[in-house]
Length: 406
Image (tube, rainbow, N blue to C red; front, side):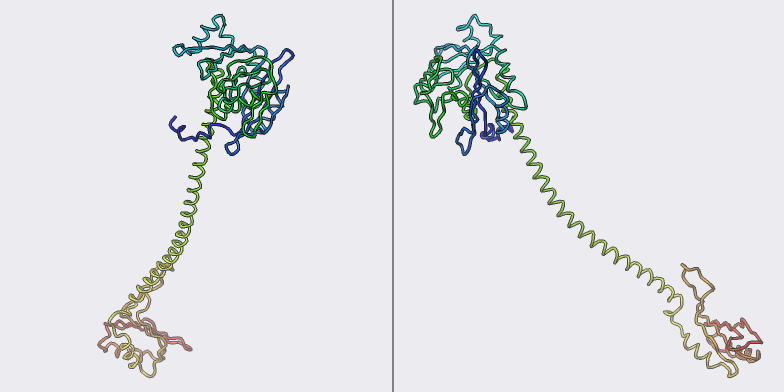
């Protein structure tokens, strides 16, 4: 897919791999293993050994988080050298028809290892035998990434073994031409070891090291028509790509979440500050509204009381007071009195241009004379005697006058 082009090549392999050589003998199967690790672009052997117990190797592989490559040697493995010309077909089915015509290919796993000098080797082993060995390692969540038949996986060392004429493995002696395997003889010799810089690979670990080395250098060592084996490295690569994609997506999601969190908290702080200011302004606005309503009520009361009207109530009051006879005692004087009782939430109404006079007098005739005096005033419209009580005692008024002015 298009996104795969963005994956760095270094991410397509793991940093650690466990190479295992399965040596099948008459008395059983033994295992030679090498755990390789890449550190600072340099391959190191972090663990190696021999075992007859696959779970021991699986435990080590888990410890180093290493996928496993298998190489199968010994009893049941058939290897045939092939020489071809430039015009020969290198399709595996054509090679098998020409060189192994009697072989029932459906019963075998077949691999073709090509050299650089128009030679190569066909390696095959019965499927039942290979599957049994695969089942020993393809469990306990351990990832099996490739299976090699025979010691021909040592071709992956061609670049570093080009100066060698021969190499030895745990089961064979290998004659080399330009680093590639030219011929294979049974048996081994501890003399033909391989040294790469300061790294020395013993013959017993040559095959297991070569399988891990080929993995790190991304070499395709063989050609095969067996989908069961071809799918192993393909699944491994797809798994790494998928894991890389998921990791990138998680990182992107995390970064987006982090940015969103920063923006959210920033906006949240701004929103909180703005909300606090709005609450303050809202409180002040409510106070202002309440004051305006109170002012409007008081203004209405004042206007209804006639304070703002162009009247001369004080002048009228002075004239009325000046006309009071000495025998009459003025007790109360009301300007624009309230009109009856009002409800608690209602505005108070006042009688405009009206005065209420309350006083004490023992003689009704004097009150009548004063009423006549008031009626003679130019500013008086009407005068009504509302109340007169003859038996008034103490300081309580015994008469009430209602005066309407112009």
